[in-house]
Amino acid sequence: MSSFGSNTGVDKKEENGEREARQPPSPTQIGGGVVPRPVPGEQRKVALVTGITGQDGSYLTEFLLRKGYEVHGLIRRSSNFNTARLDHLYVDPHNAAKARMKLHYADLSDASSLRRWVDALLPDEVYNLAAQSHVAVSFEIPDYTADVVGTGALRLLEAVRCASKPIRYYQAGSSEMFGSTPPPQSESSPFHPRSPYAAAKVAAHWYTVNYREAYGLFACNGILFNHESPRRGENFVTRKITRAVGRIRLGLQTKVYLGNLSAARDWGFAGDYVEAMWMMLQQEEPGDYVVATEESHTVEEFLQAAFGYVGLDWKDHVVIDPKYFRPAEVDSLKGDSTKARKALGWKPKVGFQDLVKMMVDQDLEIAKREKVLVDAGYIDAQQQP
Ligand code: NDP
Ligand code: GDR
Image (cartoon, rainbow, N blue to C red; front, side):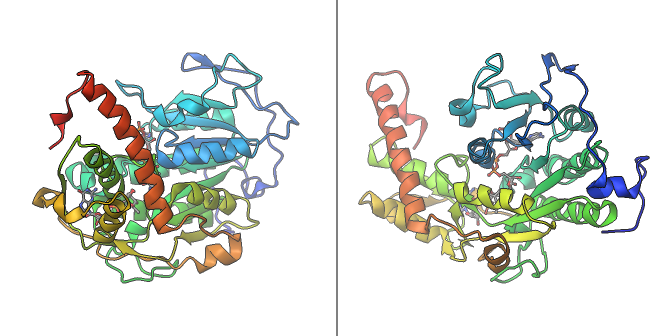
């Protein structure tokens, strides 16, 4: 713990978590809704999750609800509903006895909204999962990516630091931070980011370390390698492939256009990885952890596994389109997660082949439903090549 003071007006003892939490004020009207406060003395833990509508946010929320948490998620305003991954967890907040997941509007680019919700909810744990998380897109919108991914983390850390009780903080770091550093990559491997996204994640990583050292915050960086699932966004390569496999198998599409097939990634299952996030925040001391399967496969190997599972040859269906190559590529990622396995007792449960099958099985089901609509003339299969 550092001996440096803070500028929040509270003394060091308080920042190190030795102060009694303030009595939470009574419910406040914020953002058009009544904010439920944790009842003093109640055992239920409260988590605040940014990026709750994303792949990891939905798995983490399921996990925390199973653990008995009350989960508050910050969502950004969108012209379409962006809560599809959470619909199965949603209970109308008027059903106060049952609704343990609550959603509030905020944005990582808006410091005041972050500060307001941290102050209003006074959670025990904050999980910062929000990001413009697409590496290729970060070359198109570098400024925005840096703002949300890098400075956004700083804004949230500052809100946590200034809160009136000690709050544990998780930062969603990425194997992309290692970039061109050769595998295996561990906590002691140097960072060499290869995209605006990765550089912004490196900034967020060091902001987190800095707040831990400077203010004694219980702040952890999870350096997570690629993790996928049936809920993966459809423009990440694994899901793009499994969606295409489902549609091609059902005759709704014939080709899929891809970029670099020789890149190697350490792919795990997202449901396993959110458990590691939680485990980090339950330790006696904060720290940084690599989370990985320690097994690496190329995009081509993923294609073989996914197409092969439904009896197809990927070479008959894949077309290389140079537009999907990146200005700078991360060639090879394979994690060394010894620290997480020893210190947290974490290990992945789902292997590569089972992950591929899980994703293809779901995307076959989605394609079957699409086919019903196509056959009935409700949608046009020719939207895809
Ligand atoms: P997703 O892209 O699925 O989800 C990102 C989330 O961030 C969404 O909820 C999105 O909201 C939200 N978000 C985006 N911009 C903003 C903003 N300006 N303000 C508030 N919320 C915002 O990512 P994943 O679930 O896959 O990843 C979770 C985190 O882990 C990310 O930080 C990612 O960079 C990191 N990571 C992911 C890995 C992986 O393999 N999945 C590996 C290593 C790190 P909306 O739904 O409205 O778009
Ligand atoms: P990544 O995931 O960049 O590793 O970031 P992505 O699935 O986008 O790319 C993996 C590899 O596949 C190659 N590739 C393609 N990628 C996409 N998206 N689309 C294609 O058509 C295509 N063809 C080949 C890429 O070049 C790359 O080498 C993910 C994100 O979740 C990040 O937020 C996270 O931090 C890292 O994983 C760890």
